[in-house]
Image (cartoon, rainbow, N blue to C red; front, side):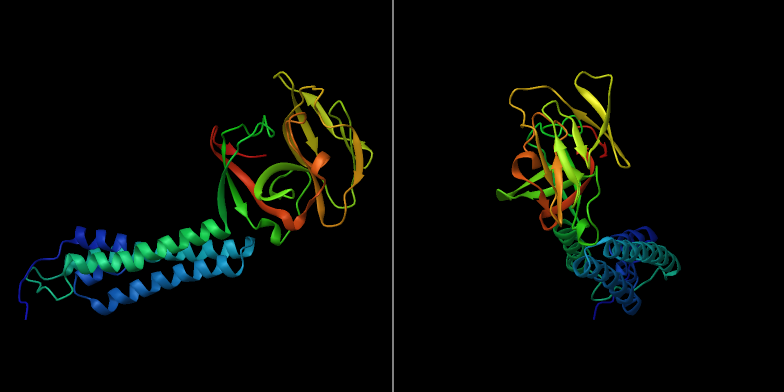
Length: 288
């Protein structure tokens, strides 16, 4: 039987519980309470993962955030309690069989690191995804080489809105993801002109010049954003169409350098993949 004595350091106990709730309690010899804190934290992480997997919508995302906030509280309380217990611990504390660094490391890797990796995987697969923009079709809003952050499966519980940005599967090459701006919804009559003007239901979308050359401020429904119109002989020809049910009409913000619904047709709602929310490289900021 191991009778080695070693005092418990409050700072070590707090650090261990900061890595994984309950680990600091094991360090102090309180096996039952340590595993209780550990199980509670893991259960909350599993609940957050389940919320994202079962309902990858705004409701599921809200539930997942709620579980994570509660888990953060558990983390903080566990850390404080571990520190207090170590401070009250007798200086001649007798080491248990599980008071070994490798035991702490195994528990952290299996429970703490493992659940964090699992959550990150589900987050990437069901909620958030980054894309690198390879073309100039969305200038000046998004430039070639910019990296954007998107919320996936947003359109499972709502339809797209006029003026918002969407990521969708290219109907001509389903493995390709494109980003464009929604101009018209199902039932809208869209007309585009050779000079870059766009009409929706016979109403011309308002645009005003900006301080930059060939850049205009466009107002569509409740959205205000910038577009680029550089006249070119290679621009799409004028046309008109009525958007079919469960489809949307999309355009690139660089109107004369974009392949969009003017050539590939309206995009089915089922083909919408994500809603861009921010640029995280190439000028960090919220996307409009």
